[in-house]
Length: 140
Image (cartoon, rainbow, N blue to C red; front, top):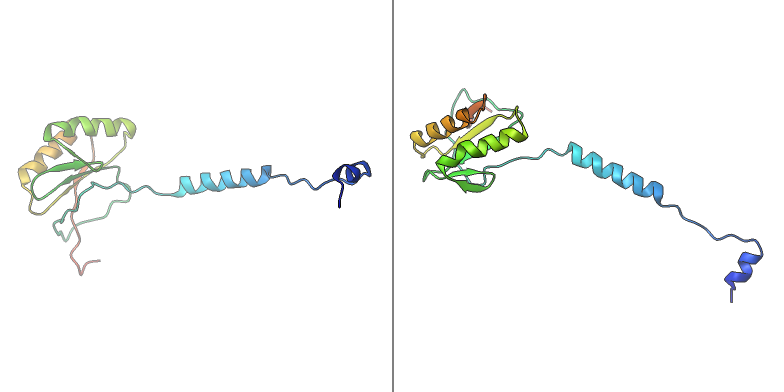
């Protein structure tokens, strides 16, 4: 049987494992993955976008507003009223003043709702408001 006390008295040291560098490395990796991950915002509903031959893709979209075919308005995966569009966009622009607003309207939604939403976005102070469209299937 091994006597730990006698081994220490004899001058034999135990093995010490220093895990501080390992913890530092884990935190560095965590920060790296958090910074490099792109967070995709969605409107929260499935929308059948209209097709446009002149559609272009935007690299950085910060504020998405969805309009369904039954004219319901969604932002940040929750339904909002037409009168609340301005306040919600103002709040989103306060977080990111350079944010672009993309209105993703279903092809069967009424044009008047999309115009009212666009108007609310501009009244909220957004300088960059766009309507989303899909490219034709052969134009990709």
